[in-house]
Amino acid sequence: MKERLPLKLISLLLLLVVFIGSVSCASGTGDAGRDTAGEKADTAAETKAEDTRLYPDLPDDDFEGYDFKVLHWYVTGWDSRRNKDIYAEAENGDPINDAVYRRNMAINERYNVTFSIQNETQDKVISMTQQFIRSGEDAYDLVYGRMVDIPSLLTGGSFIDFHTIPHINLDNPWWDQNSVEKLSVLNKLYIVASDINIIDKDATASVVFNKKYAQDYNFPDLYEIVEKGEWTMDTMMGLYKDKTVDLDGNGIIDENDMYGFLGKHDVTASFYMGGGGTFVSKDEDDIPQISFESERNYDIAMKVFEIIYDKENFYNQHLMQQPIDDPLFEQMFPDGHGLFYWTRLDGITSMRASETEFGILPIPKYNVEQANHINMVSIHTSGLMTVPKTATNIDRTGIVLEALAAESKYTLIPAYIDTALKGKYVRDSESEAMLDLIFANRVYDLGDVYGFGGLANNFLSIAGTGNTDVASFYQKYEKATVAAIDKFIEQIESFD
Image 1 (cartoon, rainbow, N blue to C red):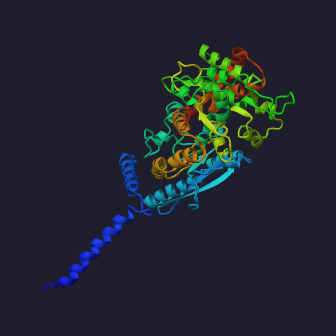
Image 2 (spheres, rainbow, N blue to C red; image 1 turned 90 degrees about the horizontal axis):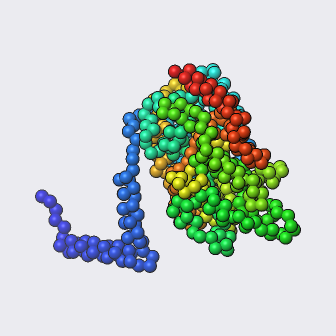
Image 3 (tube, rainbow, N blue to C red; image 1 turned 45 degrees about the vertical axis):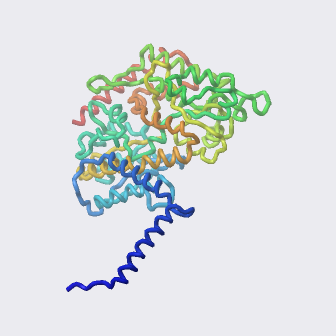
């Protein structure tokens, strides 16, 4: 027989339930109470995000605590560009570090795999990779060489074609489709960008403007100009022309004064490619071919020369500073010495302590007919993912990379764009939209990445010569570029 509770006790329990309910309701409306409506909205947003999230089609597996090893480049003195997207020891409050840690822990819990990184100077990464490849040693699961240094490894047959790696689906949104399309050769892909990394995002070109100066000069809404498709090189030049100011009044225009446009040699290639100019393109069979010689490319080049040779308005760090002092140059814009400033996105993080109000814009188009803004990824400050051919468990490599890239899309990339860039460094909501536009239109040119015949590299350094004869410049490098492309194709074909 079941025992019955005394009626008086039942009544007391009912009163207690009512009391607790009333306290709970009151706590939601008092001054110190929670914003339950906000909580519900947050929960709804999280549920919606979860509902729209894509998941990789991967098998379950247990890699028994395997240490997934990464070899990564650095350049001495470039401490701000040290790798921060592969490994994090613990959470420390930094949004990027914490996102990397949580991402890695999620993959660890799913596949029982850990991650480690070995940072070496850019030249040592090349020599170490050549050595362990020659010896057939399965020393690292991934190698990141600096992009400008990687051709010697690629043509040596050091890497695996990503198309052949099991479980990797390059159509998924966590793989940079621009890199998949532009960096393949003969339908083989040996280097690729993904959401696993932010160093290549940091290496993306942009233009920054001083908002106070823009207001003082009664500039139109620059964001609106971009949205209308009217942000062109001519538009930009028209805004900063004759705006150089002798701030110290000594009659000499130098780094102590205010220039219309602050930049360096890099503006040459960045604006050329931003205008849709190409060095090397590909035919319908994915075979590289020189493409510099065209009327439009020549016109873009001449427009770029008009910008970089204008010493009254354009401050070229590589010409004005001897010796080159990057920290000093990078401080010029925050200190009010420039109306416009060419920078990679990693330069924005260096301005976080600045009192200068600034906005971010994409690289200007050549003309209004150009469909999209195009933003170059620097081969000098970034390195993309490669898988050594000595990898003995390629099945495991594919699972880990696909899982890592997918998880990064929903952890690391939001932390980088929304929390770090948009939330911490960018000063207005319009610049956030500009960042979205910049990331959606990044470009890789094979002639720039692989340095065929020195064409792209010498075009970059033309800024210091004053040369405006595009045709003679091209003729000087045409034969060597074609020969380098032909040799490159032969080497790629020999990997079959």
